[in-house]
Length: 480
Image 1 (cartoon, rainbow, N blue to C red):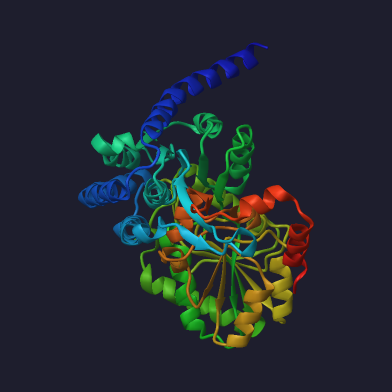
Image 2: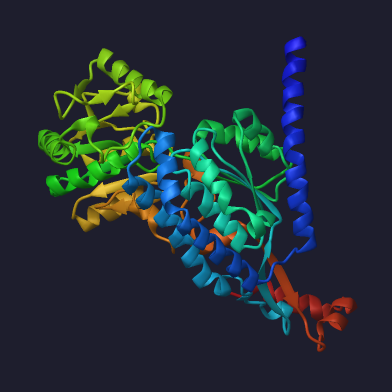
């Protein structure tokens, strides 16, 4: 009983800490329930200027949080997508907010119907650690563009980055977005706030808890999760190009990406060639292994230990771990890990059951592409599915025969950077979309609007209930 009381007291304390922030944003939204479009654009431009000004500080802060992170990973994966998202939103927002005319049909003539996009209210955003700038800011940018106020919960694993991000939301922008920091318990209480919409990026397991907590208030949620994203190499593929594509996808940010290639299917006759190409390319681009300056660290010792355990488990169950270099493949003290290729894997191994989220790559052979499609379809839908090859018909067959959040051909990761298409998962890899217009719609309420002028002959007919009207109504729904 004493332990339960202590836990409840702690939860109550955290809730009391969050509620004033929520109520303050709620009040601000009530004071201005529909922020003028020009004002939204002005705020987005201000955010973009501040973000660019803080570029060097953010690069240094993310590197400190990771133990070491390349400037390339921060610029390419965090800063560029964030700035691009603001620019794209500013350009297209005036068009997105316009009412969308729809067909009224004969039964509603001469009225007009349309959809208007209204701000939802106070939106909650919970961001992860792997891309602590982009995955915090892009949902916030979109929510603000839709006219909402935001509470942003940042990851506890990136304290240095958080301090710089907080500088973005000062003065005017503080009235529109409040930054919250705290451990996992605070995130639980955060999810229980009665938001107009809750946006979460993170693991599938945590996503389930977030959705359960949000359901207490019937809060609609967007879940950007992850899973095991496969790569399929077809028999006609250029293996060297395939290896380059995979190496980029797997080594960027040390593989700590929700859409990183998780495992690879390769035709049996190309198996050894792929491994040779991956090892050759790794030696070329990372000749000093974990001592290279172009390699980002695993976020923490805890995650390094988790990855090491995956390798140990696979090795103990008969897998072969291929290391491109004889030394400098791992540094536990600095939690740095190079590319580890794993062959002869089976489904009993943890490396084939869990999302890897690191520089470990299982490689599976296949004889028949139908076996590959069946294998993928028998498992939770991935956030990304990659196909490398040139057989257009085969690629189309794979696309139509599978489900995934995103689909890319002869590329990895970069489908996420396209501003004008939605991004989101399906099934266990997530629900809902953001980016571009679809993101604006996610954070807006699509309001049905019927507009009738002074001339309205329907009223007398509707009130009369005469037989002629009944026949006319039947004609409307019985006609071909």
